[in-house]
Length: 450
Image (cartoon, rainbow, N blue to C red; front, side, top):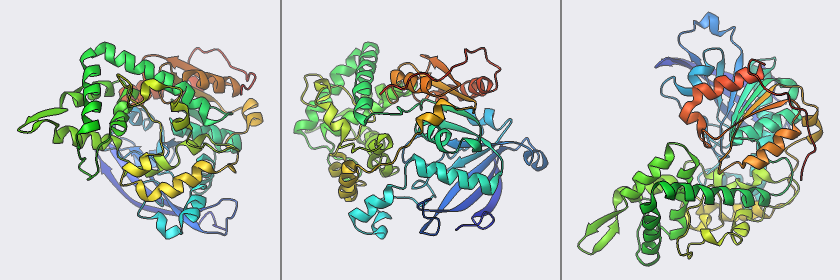
């Protein structure tokens, strides 16, 4: 058992461009059901505005930030801006590296072999979902804060926030969520049937703005079928892997970045037109998972409760032929994860057997408590983006109706990365909603749809 006064180590503090940054490390059990078993070290960075004196900071309430993912480490801010600037005006922010990411026991092709064979690695990674992340957060809260704190969950961080509300609501003062209302029930197939349609609509919107880019993406796809183009990481770029640049479509400003990427695609050479080194390097940065392998390994398991995901996105793809590489004008894909990722990405190839075992696993515990959410008393405010291609609007509203008192701000002004576009305003508005300072209609829990 880890004693509250033994599991926390405070590190150094330094200042950087309007911020005061302090390192914290915590010892947590790998399995919270076995507190005397193997342990992990979890890292978090405390961020406060340097305009506050240390004496003032000591009296500020805490806000835990839960990053998107899965597999994404906490933000590494280089200056105080966006939502973080707004938050640090009244909070001391704890930026958590969720277990398996960043400096918190990173789980990669380099570290996982130390756990054992593929079966041992798969079993190990079952402890890296939202339920374990929330249990880590509760242990940290007891060691660092004592009383309730506020939390802010972006994307997958919002999924974690719903798990927190389900199993440890007493630790929460208020909850803010952006683009992260997960479906509470059903299989991952529901998610992908919905999001394929959203991605297709976003493709159409993009090509209406840049009709020449539809021609260009098809040209690139056909070129890659017959010409070997190699990414800086040494492997061949395939047509289906190129389609992954559709991740750009999930953002407001990033949609322009996709256009600029395609502008750089071809360069004339003595042997004919080839894809430019600039283009290949930029594509590699978008389609490689070396920096966040858990995104691919655990992605579908974030929806699993008592059933196998069985490569859901890959199976559902059969019902959406417009995304097939052989389609006349194949569409770009989004966040979907396919089995072939683990044969084409060097960072994922060693993890292919682990991914197969996780995709076949059926013994996944519940991530949400519908009864607890239906009687929730913690103030919750969520931004739902009408055209979000990652977290479907209709599924989000279904979840919102199942959480008592949850206030929704639905907007079509932003896409999934809204906080990168206008984080200060979004954070401030959600905080006002939590505190009853916005005019909203109170929401009671409705029937939970399956």
